Amino acid sequence: MPRGNNTLPLTAISVSLIAALFLYSLPLQGGLAFWRPPFVLLVTVYWLIVQPQHVGITFVWFSGLLLDLLYGNVIGQNALAMSVTAYLLKTQEYRVRHLSLPFQCLAALFLVMLYQILWVSTRLIPENIVLGWRVYYPALSSALIWPLLAGGLYKLHRLFH
Image (cartoon, rainbow, N blue to C red; front, side, top):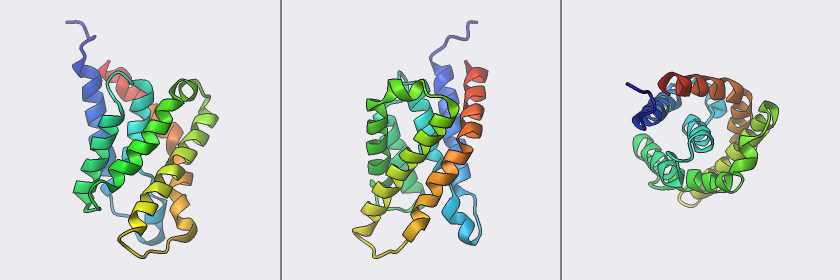
């Protein structure tokens, strides 16, 4: 049976999204929790670039909504931040797809920084929180793990394709 089936990329996307939700839910102690990358955002960004025919802004929005429901955030908080970030990525999709790995890491840094700014600004409406520079730690950790994450997702894509 040929492996060109359309369900195979969707299987890889689903497996990676479940793994991202698992990684996002792992407990971290103390200040290490502030360095946790937004794995769900990074995985959806990867698939948005690699499989644009299967993953769009609607998929990213539903992933953000799932994240909101699973972790008790205000409904739509992650969905809004992730979909705005995905929209801005889609406007530059062709350019980002052809970046070298160091520049992809830099792009991941800026995308996560934008996501964090949107996420925190929607969180400031109902709550009075002070985060300081800690809000940018996930962007730095995302840039550092992007080569490993992209390499792992590439292997997963090749495995199911």
